[in-house]
Length: 170
Image (cartoon, rainbow, N blue to C red):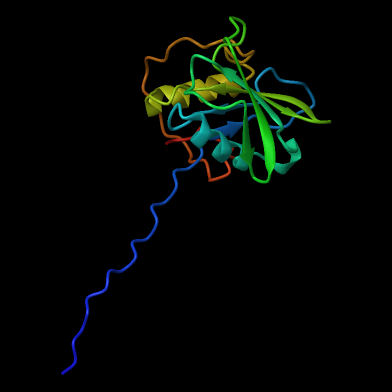
């Protein structure tokens, strides 16, 4: 008599959510905002490595990150990300640059990302991203744009590396 033993099939891993990151196009003029990041949560230990992995290699190795102390969950002063140590600095938000993450890369300088709160709606996030990266609109200098009230129109989708030429639709 042959007895069959039911075996549990391994469940496939859940797909990782896309990194919601949009970078400003590279240009000859310096910008006050180099990109916009819309993390999925305020858990810095989870969100930061994913965002750093999505950055272009031309940005170099990020060795220092400064964040708004009040906006993020507790985190140590350092973390190991992709075979290197990243120093985390928590500071009060600057009134001149609210909702920013500052990335430092030795020899390549500083990059500033505007952070959209994780609980923002898709429509609000799309409008904030477009406003922050459009030099012709108010808020392009890094100041917080007005709170969006209109629904967003059709938008393109940003890929896993966060690159795209059109506003993302999450």
